[in-house]
Image 1 (tube, rainbow, N blue to C red):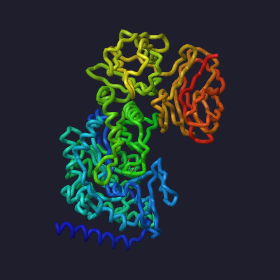
Image 2: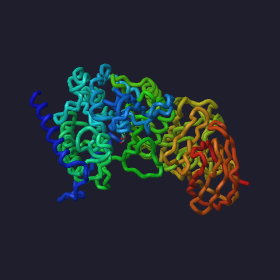
Image 3: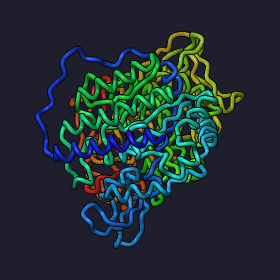
Image 4: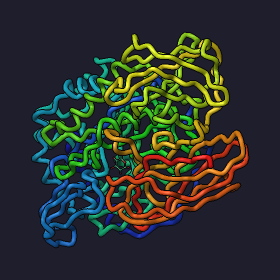
Length: 613
Ligand code: GLC
């Protein structure tokens, strides 16, 4: 024990001296190392692709602060800093931080290292309960768990041999035998789930030489040589410790690393440790070192093509625990995000941010369980699914796809039950004797199906009240090959373009309880595929709500364009149908891209309608 502490002390002193000598100036430009390139190898991703849903945990010293810091910043000025939650209503004597990065508070409030270090004594983890976390993940329907072993504040949740800035110097360390990772890894694996490690390999504000702007240095950056030294002294040995001690199934790097040398070293540590370990693309920003899967954050662009992708998302707006952030996402929205990620052939990694004592905010627990209950009944539409053959969505939601025992299933996730007693499946062109339809929530339900020429399947005789509260899943089983020709068509002289049917880029769906709408942000694009079978002029209208006026442009693959004016409806709940003008279209298949230009930036859209004159 003494030997280890001495080693740690020696390392930190010698490194500090090296930093003092080097100062903060930039050294010679980076030179590409000699020798062949090591690029991540082909790895079997099948378990990961079958899993589709995992839990992310952000836990560390920042959990003690919970988004609030009262003290002096690095300039010595007294501040009271709060990481913003959207419901923040504290008095204006408070310096409200930009963003809601609870785990970024050291950086955002420019907290001196010395002051931040003191919070370690309040990190108790007295109610940390790995089994309860695993039980929560199980009841949520999650198949893997990834925890922050070291975030950007450099603090290690295991007893590292190369730093003192770790769990063993906190009350939590005493309580938990110097290790919060091992008991979680064990409980996770005992439950049959996979275990992953998040590790901030480059950005580090506490250890000397960490990459990126450093609050302690008034946001200056260490030189490349100092970065190199940091990687040698801390990152590589820590990664080796984590790999050797916990044998993770996933290694989740974070964040920006523009240097090939670091990517090569990190990559070889991981791939030489196991033939099955999977790593994410944040190992580096270089195209050659992109790991095994992409990691969009908070939202996804449906237009992007991914081979393997995992959307990571918070349940409120913060990753780490933030006492001011009550902006909890609704279960319907989380389910929609999950199914949309699955539709694109990807996973959802959904975050919880425990408090310093280890307890998990009740709101997140209850949302996780609600979604988990739904998954329990409709699991076929999630686990084992692969990218949907439908690039666009059906009118009321996304589809997921799976091949089981040589039979193909398309699962339609209906997030809006319109009460009409009928349902359209445009673009599914198989005759009715080639398909079987089933609502897993009510397998006994009877209804009629008809194949309508040129449109697709038409279901009638359905109940007017929804089958499932959050989302109704329809299992479309193909006895032969699916015959698909997706696209929105004219039905009774009207082309309906619903919010849930849109292919959207990084915008959210809202109002699930009433009629779902797109919470649209100016500049972001909404796409549909529209199939016109006979020439005609259409009157275009939109059902929208917004505080200010603006314009909406409908672009039919640059062949035809229409720009309409929308008027203020004086509220985000006051929906109105507004006329956008008319457009003539010749027969053909069009990708329709709709953009908005609004005074206010925000506009809610429930539906567009194109009515044949
Ligand atoms: C970002 C943030 C970080 C968070 C992570 C999760 O890189 O820096 O705070 O842990 O994303 O994806």
